Image (cartoon, rainbow, N blue to C red; front, side, top):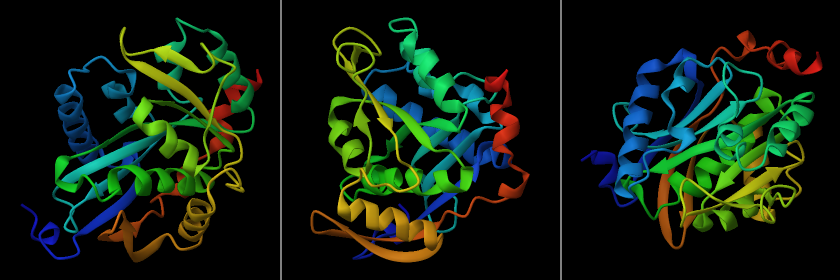
Length: 254
């Protein structure tokens, strides 16, 4: 057990990076995510595909120990135009091909998908693997340069997604819902239309998102349902100057 989790107020680091810049952490992300999926007997979700490690248009957010040796959760932002379709395209494209047209349309200004959200039981209940990771996903999108985000949410994450600014995308499926990853499991297609302003987020979430954008390296004691955790935010994406959104999305202008 990480000693920093045994403190009265546990301590973790929340860090962002481009997938191709840290393959070792990506592999630990995959192991942790796969373990969580196996608990629920869900092995065939598209966001768990390993090819994203080599995709230059994928950005990763992890919850880890302060010494960076242990991973407790994570999420990813996939930018449209990389070496793979967005996971949401692969997941629901067979049921509703309109998703591919919507992604192509939004990609001209820069779009992506928030996906792969997971957390271990060790930090369950603190919100680090849900609300705080999700806020950071929106916050770092400004560094990446994208204007909108897609997401595919399980029923228990829809309200969380709405609080940070996503809305159910009723242009797809049955008023936004699909049976995925198999019969008996419902997934909801969601869309974030105003990443820059975050106006669709709740007031509390909007304030937090904008504060994180303005202070990408900060230590904050966060509270959720009367439980506190100290988060060391390290969300300035390294080597971001090597990233060129226009090059990635150029294919959509052809």
